[in-house]
Image: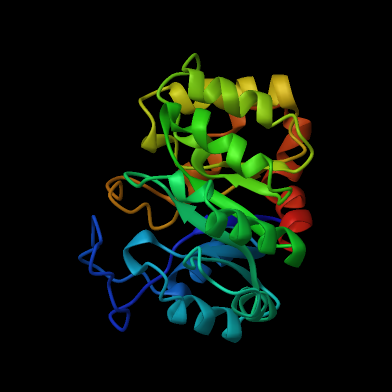
Length: 257
């Protein structure tokens, strides 16, 4: 089984967040993504709520309802969300809650509300998927790890260098059995950095919790991208024997396919 564990979808019906940093000038409906999966022999997928939709998960949940066997979701909620609200999302196909901390304060993870949110995710069996970059991981990871919830690090942690302290913290954390790393979006780091970091992760922490995702439709980096390229870039940096698990088996375990 092949699984695309990181993609976004949206159409003209979505309501954009007022505090968005970016908004697309095109549509990327889920059916267009599914057609890409079909064309490349990819069986299942994980839709991730994009940052410009904030906590309005209605489009995501509608797609999951149409394809309950094929898709799982990663939703976004306020840290004040109740256990009942999170349980409802899980019942509708969501398997992780996303925290996009790019350009945002992560101090909320340390207060009582943030700790409660993480604890509720742990109790419900929901992973916590986090997007952050560079050395911000030095402060973010301790708050996440103490929660006991499964942690998913987006886009290799968007490292600035294989030697940056933030990626060093990710290397240490990735050895833990409840920390997973998305192998995706190499273009969101400086050139050649993502490949070098992927090779280091495989060597230091193994490949059992590395998860490939296409990052379709490559928001803000659309030019020249293709699903074939998204699948191909990981090959030089991993043992051939690891590719089936990284491109499918690991995600099947985490997201419950």
